[in-house]
Length: 388
Image (cartoon, rainbow, N blue to C red; front, top):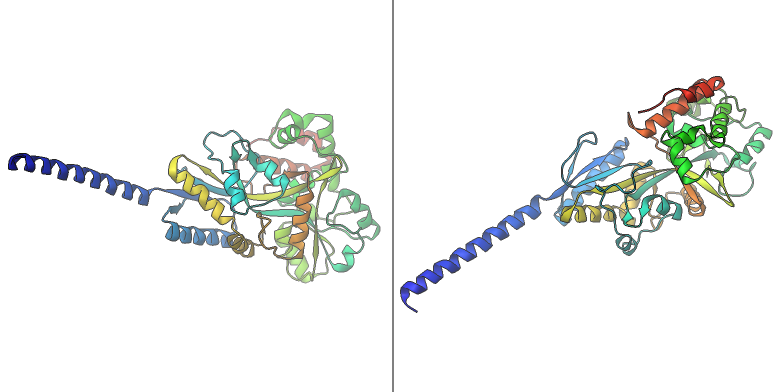
């Protein structure tokens, strides 16, 4: 090989190495800058701050960039969305399902009814992170009036009436109205009918559905509820609990455990008839990923990381909501009772406690509010156009 030929080949090797080096630099930079946007629609400030802190910790340890984004904006690329679940399109092509195998390997276990809600054949279209149950809070003396058990049903109302124990509830809240809509001794409709009723379909006008609307209207004068309950908001009830003696309360577990001045209270979640079992009204804070490629894979890993026992305890303690990973520690005996009730539930009924303006959940909550405001005209209210 001549010196000229050697120099020519050397220049080729150097050029090739430069190209490879440049490619490696681009790949490294690309991996550093790739990431996901994180949106959180729940209103709890402590919860938002804690999730943001955990996202920052994850970014630092795993090198995966997670940037906070406005829930009302439309971020490009991979997005991690965390919010209260309602009915969604199960075959949404934009959703990147989470692998059931990965979730099981991580130690995640939850109620079968939750799995049936969130899983599809392709995987988990959204994964439960935290949850809330709706039911009754009693003092130890009051709860002794009810049969031994972990739940509260419409049949138990007769015992409250006999003991002259009226339920006080913030019935002006959308979540309360939604949970009480099925408060009747009638079996819950099938999934298709349930979906149609909540999303404004023709299912609302069937004879069986009309019975539920009629029952809701009757609640406004039901003596089992304290007078004025269905015009009250949470601050109204909280004020009464601080300044006056109040009886049993109805609301969500997270809210009931935060009410001050009412002394010790034990919770029993509300359930509805369902064949030989029961359905349960719950709110589920879910996380889902939209996007493709490696960033979507790493975004899913972040959600799985949030489901670890340690992180579930942090999120649960911070927010007051219950851990959706049933292998995580309970907050207290009441949350254990709610968890046991969820394990025994055949189905869940989704409650959207903070429906966004223009959403199907907002339309549903608004309709129920109109019926409770005009119970004598419930049929006319139902016939009116109510939509997003």
